[in-house]
Amino acid sequence: MKIISRWLSAVVAASLVLTGPAQPAAAATTTVDNATAGRFAASADWGTSAWSTQRHGGDYRFATPNTAVSDAAWFKASIAEAGAHLVEVWYPADPGYNSATPFMVATTGGVRSVAVDQRANGGRWVGIGTFTLAAGDYNVVGVSRWTSQPGYVVADAVRITSSTGAVSHALPLPRTALPRSEYDDPHHDYPAIDLPVGTGTPAYAVRAGTVTVIDDSSCGRGINLTGTDGAVYTYCHFSSWSVGNGAAVGAGQLIGMTGNTGNSTGPHLHFGIRTGSTRRCPQNYLLALYDGVTPPAATSLPTTGCFYATLTSEEVVPLG
Image (cartoon, rainbow, N blue to C red; front, side, top):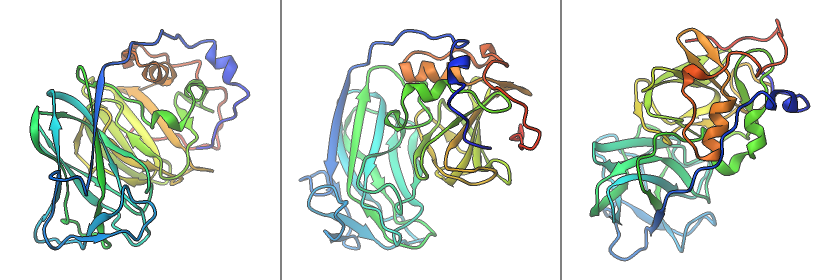
């Protein structure tokens, strides 16, 4: 799939129905560094380093992988109110670090694990998902050594942001990754959209559902997310996955890193929606997410008006 031309955006934008912005929910943010007194715990097998300039604060903790025990390092936080919370992590990245570091979140439904590639996206906050947390003062986020991948696992800092009300939808990319205008662009030859972002940009679940991993010559590394609404949300051209086949995910959870795999001429995220065997134009849905309002039902999305040509030489992403 090719990055789409921008000059036809205005033609399609006229056919997209927009809604007004929603009022932002109240939020509170807690940041815990590995050096925060009384807020971090790790065994003696976790070392301390200040080598990387991408660190948060004065230092960070590291350990070798261990496939026999978890030996997790834990960040303790005070959660004032039960409900949905965005969890972000900070770590220095290095090609020699671990590509599948297990970050664990103690949710009301049990501990959930998210694999994070610590070889990329270092020196910034990386969202790993939105989770339902209980109120109280307890170990909320852990970094486990239990991974079969080589390279140090790193525990540096976490940031937890609470919001009033449950989070049921999320943009597929960080809000700062693209301006609003990118979300109403047409696809080139069938209902879908190509979002131009660089390799290694976090990709998130737009809603809760179940993951089916894709790995083929067209989509490359990707995911079909079967939402709780029954619709299928397709992501293509990942550089890596952050969840496994069959995983249950929540809205806003990290599911992969964007890339250029499969039939692609440049790094981007291909995103599509279908109901049954019918492909739907995702632009109205994405614009609503960007504006912070409840998106339209997938079954109400149009099937035409969001693409401009039939290119017989282009592969169509399989329905899967």
